[in-house]
Amino acid sequence: MQPEDLVRDHTIYSCVMGSRAFGLATDASDTDRRGVFLAPTELFWRFEKPPTHVEGPGEERFSWELERFCELALRGNPNILECLHSPLVGHADGRGRELLSLRGAFLSRQVYDTFTRYALGQRKKLDADVRTTGAPRWKHAMHLLRLLTSARDLLRTGELHIGVGDQREPLLAVKRGEVPWARVEAWMARLAAETEEALPGTPLPPEPDHARVADFLFRVRRDSARQADTHHEVVQGVVGGRRLGQD
Image 1 (tube, rainbow, N blue to C red):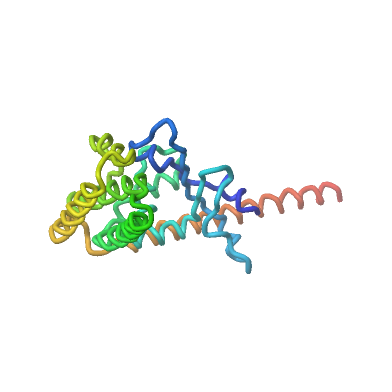
Image 2 (image 1 turned 90 degrees about the vertical axis):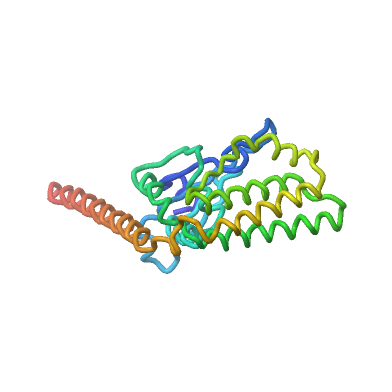
């Protein structure tokens, strides 16, 4: 089975991410599609395992195999968690809807570390741009401000909302380079401080609910294996019946 076939035939959840999901889209914005596919259990019984992720088919599309997706979400990966909270869901079958119902199980105080590390990495890239060219990549600066805002509000409320709401115009002004870098730096510093201040009183639990997620993954893997067994039994029965009739 080709990787593209896994995405085409076994996707359980897909959504639109990027600027369109954040409420920051303009006429020039791409449509970034993300998804989760469930590789049939029988594929894991071979030496060559299914891929953990697949690019495509088509441009601006990326998908993860369910187990890998859950692993990253349990670690508090910002991109993965945001994918689960996109307001633009393209497809969700029964298993995809159950995955969405588990969104809270992936959230914990660990997001402070993961979001902060990601933000720090992006900030270092912006600082490097300023040193070499005299200005940051303004689009990246805008998205870093958005991420810091989401992290702060997540720690304050225990819920992740990725839409920027009434911050759309101020953020787009940053993207257009209309806000001095010094003001953007001060904005980032304020958000980082507010995020740190929110940590001690956050309603988020210390750890994600590993057991609940593991139970979900076990059940979908088991059901996939049972469906494969049923399919093989039906095929064998049909073949056996034809042979019997021929005899």
